[in-house]
Length: 230
Image 1 (cartoon, rainbow, N blue to C red):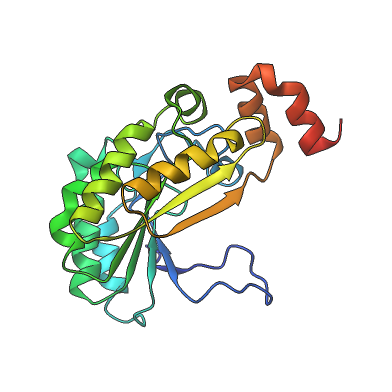
Image 2: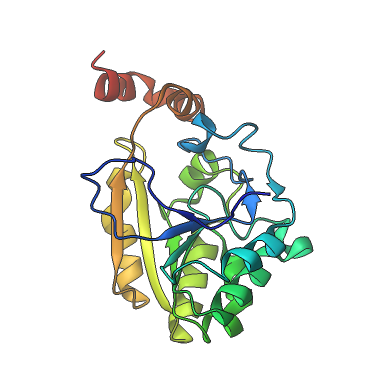
């Protein structure tokens, strides 16, 4: 079976300024079913997640011979979906990567990450939690399968209290949906001690745009005008 630690090079371009790193995910797909998600463009049944076959064995094989570049965990999935409580593939993967000395970036929307604080303390690990809004209503419509903003804020606070390196992603920003609440979100993050925030804008694709409009039909006209000029 193929490698599970692969070089992260989504654009395959010489002008890409991303520092060298690997991408890794123990699962395929994601149960959050975020309306704006881009993985539906290249993952079949993207919102019907499943574990990768023999992923821990394959990871153990890969770490034996690959250079120790940083590993971005779950850039196209979610490491802490509900099924993680059963399979614990993310936890077991972290144990392997820490044991072999790989720096790690965990990308998540889940408060379940605090379960693994014992491992996070031992490794060279940064946790990146995505929070797109403080509005529970907006989040339910935009990210129907993800934990609430309050749950994620609580997780960020717990991580910081345990001296885990933590950053927050406000991503994506979508005009008329969550842009207006950014200042309030940043204020909340500042209050709990967040020292690093990254942000990006929504890159509309036909399939994800349809889902966004379906979730926010009252915004259809303004979104069409903004993204498609009509």
